[in-house]
Length: 258
Ligand code: COA
Image 1: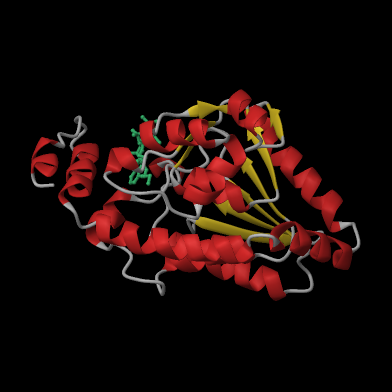
Image 2: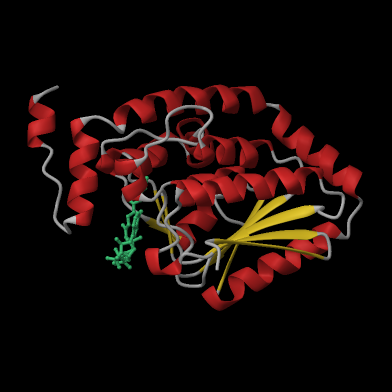
């Protein structure tokens, strides 16, 4: 079975992350499938709303770290870039249902969703610094806007998780429900939206986003360039190796070389 399930019903395109044994860590192939699904959904008249969902125990552990080691994204033609471009420019309402860990891009993709339903077990984290990396998905622009500078610095510099209640309070998510209900509630909202007049939805979303669409694209490009460079540096290599060796990373050599 594919690691991304795609299903359209009642005007709702549902994309399900389906690699639970690896905590829905996203591979290049999964980004490519998601990007393709969004591109199709954007132009398919049968699709009026899209929903990205995970499992009640895990949304996503973020980018697959083995992929970062073995086939890091090379440029703006990479599947991850196509995916980020796809979610940030998706013209129709885009929802997410998030339970359990939402790490890295598992959290930052939510910044591009219009409505987010969270399970009360949701744990959001952006441990880019801990991995020797920098923010992506325009999160260095959008997180401070959402949470205020100091909370953004806490989330992005310390990289520690914050949980469903804090996410609700800071506006990352719209609703917190039991984990078994997150996908169900998001699907209900998606169908409710799909029954509304499409042109009004499209125009409203376009107006909501138009204030900074250009700034988002520009920041995503700047972050992407830096991120791809940092993937090859000693700190990131050490962090990835430490994860798979199930030990704490030691950044002393990387820091000595700076
Ligand atoms: N990339 C590749 N594999 C991953 C992964 C990732 N991002 N996250 C988890 N996995 C794999 C583990 O290696 C493990 O595989 P194995 O069963 O073959 O050993 C399996 O998924 C289960 O992960 P595990 O760490 O045992 O689950 P957990 O419930 O203890 O912890 C997380 C879940 C998400 C908190 C933890 O896996 C984690 O921190 N993952 C890395 C997150 C990360 O740094 N992402 C990159 C962000 S840019």
